[in-house]
Image 1 (cartoon, rainbow, N blue to C red):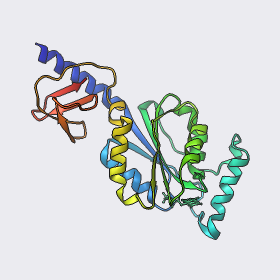
Image 2 (cartoon, rainbow, N blue to C red; image 1 turned 90 degrees about the vertical axis):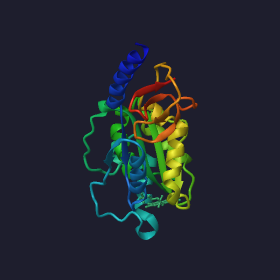
Image 3 (cartoon, rainbow, N blue to C red; image 1 turned 45 degrees about the vertical axis):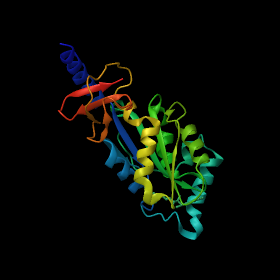
Length: 237
Ligand SMILES: Cc1cc2nc3c(=O)[nH]c(=O)nc-3n(C[C@H](O)[C@H](O)[C@H](O)COP(=O)(O)O)c2cc1C
């Protein structure tokens, strides 16, 4: 009887987890952030949105990155005016589908790349109360100012405990960096179940909802919903 109750409870929780889906929003000029977004999507089930400038033919890197520099200056001079932000293509997102949003953006002149700033300026209020992850790609510059930009543009977001910096030297290792970061910030927990307390009986191999082996019922795995080798769903304290 106890097993039946556990199973029914777990099946209900699986339904809850499916409703709470993650969204990745990325912008990429030269492809690094696109590759990072793909690495993330290879590891967890997410929907993806690409932010694209309205004018696709601008070379932000020309003349020593002069155009990108001018766009950032324009935002910095008047960050509260919509006129300061370059136009991006319209994107339609039903924000009610997502409890977690991961923003992936390049660093330009120490700031968040202008097109992603445009997107967040227009949509920041829709992200209020959601779990927000930030991944920044740069050649070598540190990301502290990009982190500040994100919090200015999404003032009521519930940001993960750490933003993730991937630079030119670590780009090839992005899969591992992302996996470690997801574990550290509890991503797999916040997109699943956070408030249930069910003991998993016995000691069996456990797999997360992406099919990844995470340990056994006897191990100290993070809280969440898992599938055992026998196919039984279970929730871990
Ligand atoms: C306009 C512009 C300004 C940039 N400024 C910096 C910078 O100040 N420091 C840095 O380390 N990288 C800088 N970069 C490099 C990008 O941050 C880096 O190449 C990043 O990985 C690009 O991501 P993407 O390929 O997704 O566009 C700049 C790139 C551009 C286009």
